[in-house]
Length: 188
View 1: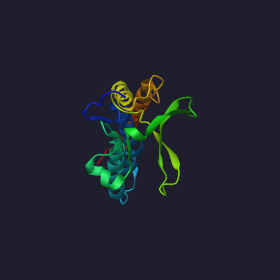
View 2 (view 1 turned 180 degrees about the horizontal axis):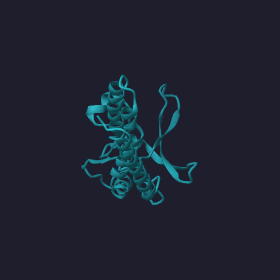
View 3 (view 1 turned 60 degrees about the vertical axis):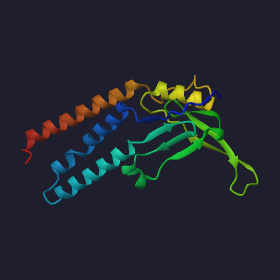
View 4 (view 1 turned 120 degrees about the vertical axis):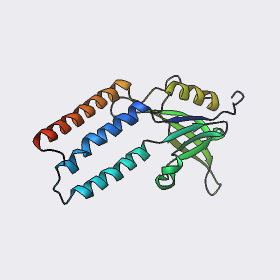
């Protein structure tokens, strides 16, 4: 490894992916309270709002690279209740393991090793390398520079056109639902 910079690099979920998931959520759930019986509308609007908060929290995942290591976390506003995430110091990182997906893509796992909790043997663990982050090429370069691992074969988990297509389809579905609902009965 070369000398490590003292900078901290933070990467959120790619805006195309996050936006697509939010539009898909809206397309799937916004019509429900609009077509529900009057007695259920307040409950469904409340559930829609809670679901939106959950989707926003899940898609606010952050990857942080710095001189100490790699960390997957969430912002403070939701991290306290999601409690997902992990942290690896660079000296734990041993390599990358590619794994084929059922859709024909590849994901990569960061292999680590360390002493077992009893201290009697070495244990190997694997953590999914984030591949849906914004500024992916910069993330890839920083990860390679800080870990000392070659990342030439690492690519985004899915090509951008798949999320672009899903975004267009979700937006079209949402607009179509709203237009048809305004023609069937007024939204009051």
